[in-house]
Image 1 (cartoon, rainbow, N blue to C red):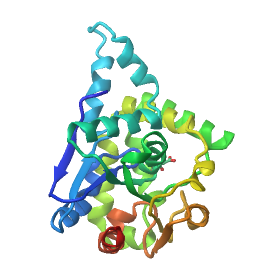
Image 2: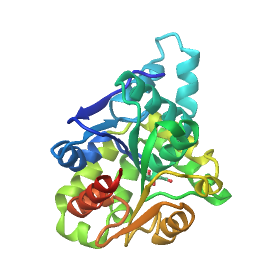
Image 3: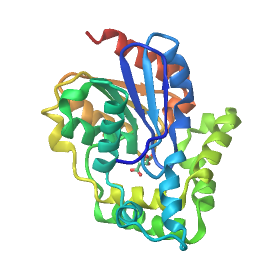
Length: 276
Ligand code: MLT
């Protein structure tokens, strides 16, 4: 396990927030503030290779140091299961027996792995802007190309190109602070950590077959304007997870929780409130 960087705020039933790619735990600021003020314990880790957790990768990049074999492996690929195991270890460390696991996009893949590996630790699931099927070959190749780009040129190209892909037209037009925050978050990501996660996403398995056997209450959320993980991906999960509800968020694309925090939080609070 890696030393974790995380926020842990509030008291009450635990909810764990898993960020997307290539972001960090700061994307959950509005959810941490809202839920911790309403009687929940909110834990938001930086996933392996991101935020403060990217220090592990920078260490490996230092040529004067003796390369550590295990850290070298982390640099090469971070699987969704690696991240799920880190979350499990963090929950143990924080003495959290069961939690609502909420993941956005890549965080959703980690949530799928977590539910598969540690089913008794999941009270409920929130799957936002994510999808169950694995990549096709073309998508996998696009990820490998992005790895080349990140390792050669850093994060600036992705940061420049991302806002129109990840944010709805209304967010772009009316919420410059969200655009700036997203841009900064991507720019701050470590190319090596992000590359390892990108390889991990390319290697992830198809979670579709898990859906029918998922037996915890699940909230599926999606932005109406998300071009990356469109509404059809959310409907696919909602149709197959028995105890699920679907929330489509208007005027939001991929970053629903940042673009429409009030709507996202209200849906989350309703869902949490209804859990017995
Ligand atoms: C994310 O936002 O986490 C990514 O879009 C996930 C992915 O590339 O599949």
